Length: 135
Image (cartoon, rainbow, N blue to C red; front, side, top):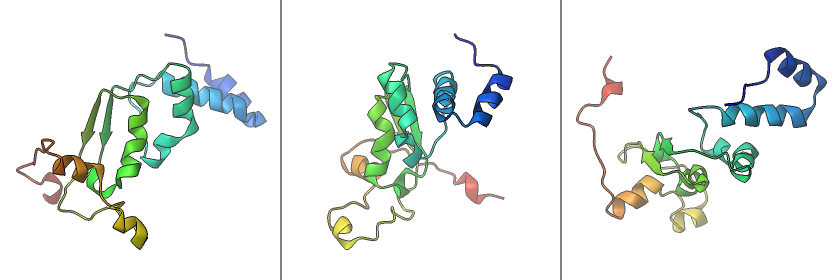
């Protein structure tokens, strides 16, 4: 593996406001990461597209928490990078995704990917104990 740039050089370039260097540094750090945490909306950021373009994309597994509260379109964003596995975690009895438009609701845009897959016959494993409810 390549070494990550020295911290003093990072700080120097960040202070100059060279946005191109900051973006390259961010890309370098993400390329060397073993785990990437992001929100669904941030998974569509330019950095992930740049990784894919440079053939560094090696995201094997995507885990989406609160998947029943995310509309289907949002949950599809991190999947466009070609992961081999996707784990959706959520409670289908909880609140659905928030969609305000009646036209969008009529087109089932408040449906989650979790719900679509569950209705399509994909296996769902329910927990027997709700751990977060215990003190």
